[in-house]
Amino acid sequence: MKTITKVVVLLTIVGAAIATVVIVENRSAKHEAELDQKKPQTHEPGVVHFERGEPQLSAIRSEPVATEAMPAADPVNGRLVYDENVTSRISSPIAGRVIALRAGVGDQVSRGAALLEIDSPDLAAAEAELSKATSEEARKRLVYERSKNLYDNEVIARKEFESAEADYRLAQADTRRTSQRLRNLQSSGHENGKFLLRSPLAGVVVERNVNPGQEIRSDNQTPLFLVTNTTQLWVLVDVPEKSLSHVHVGQKVSLETDAWPDQMFTATVERIGVAVDAVTRRVQVRCSIKNADLKLKPEMFARVSFLATGEVKGIRVHNTSLITEGIYVYVFVETEPGSFHKRQVKLALRGNDHSFVESGLTEGDRVVVEGALLLNSEAAADAQ
Image 1 (cartoon, rainbow, N blue to C red):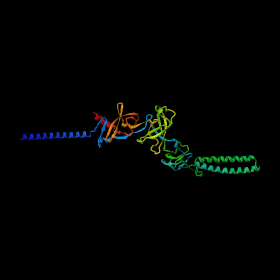
Image 2 (image 1 turned 180 degrees about the vertical axis):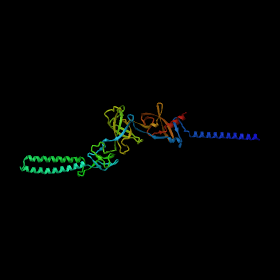
Image 3 (image 1 turned 90 degrees about the vertical axis):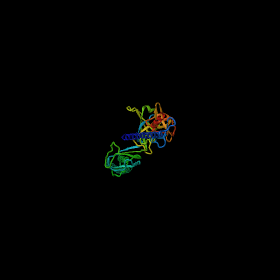
Image 4 (image 1 turned 60 degrees about the vertical axis):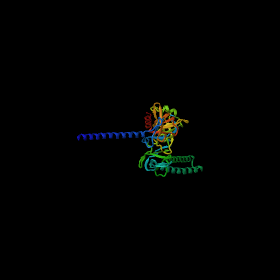
């Protein structure tokens, strides 16, 4: 009886083991079938196709390419600064104490707009001096007219008349001197010592280095206000000696910034330095750029490309799109949703972030900019 029980138990264990093996094999076969079904289907070498909804598509992004003017040399770094032709660093011409601020950073001001009000004893003294000079001139004019009348009637000697005339001319000169001083200060001349510091040009206040109640002097080295027109900027570029032959005044320049990576800005070469820096072996080139939308800010860095003259153009692509295999360069082009073709291209110029294609692409082709390495791995796996 015990022998029969052992045999039954043994048969049960063997049957369970066989059933487990069969189930595992069935599941493995099903999993392999699913993997085969998900595997990209290719119809020819260099072509990768994914069905709609497959997870690999989330890591792939393509963009249409366009033809643009090609740079004449490798891109260089540049810096945006204020256009000094429309920038004013404003200081006070007289000493005094600030009693009111009329403008702050970011305010738009017109030409002649008041920036701050100063209580100045020096200005009060100048205004009083003008009043005194005006009164003295009036008195000397009466003396001169009386002397002239007496001299015409031969009552006084010519010497006395000439002395009165000289005194009157001196009084006139003194009045002009004090009046011109106040006119230069744009003072109202009300003998109250209140001075309004005004902006000499229209623009925006970008710096203010003064506070209410502060004592200021006319010889301060730091300007009280900086007013500029931010719709016009300069781009300063240090150009290597080897690239200087590709740069000339009036040449168009393209700019790329980190703040606006998908937008190209255009500037114009305005001035080329007259000497090479002895340390860096570079020449500073100044470009001017219009900034009507105020996207560009002073002290931004930019990648500057000096465009070739004439109609030298190429198709601009991201460097992330390029796949180098030996001496050949390839990109993946999305011919239809989910279908990507590996295409050989010829580069005309390679930059730090972008390159220009001479042949192999046409304007409007959708080139893969993210996931090119993934597609190249899929294409290589299919070729094996």
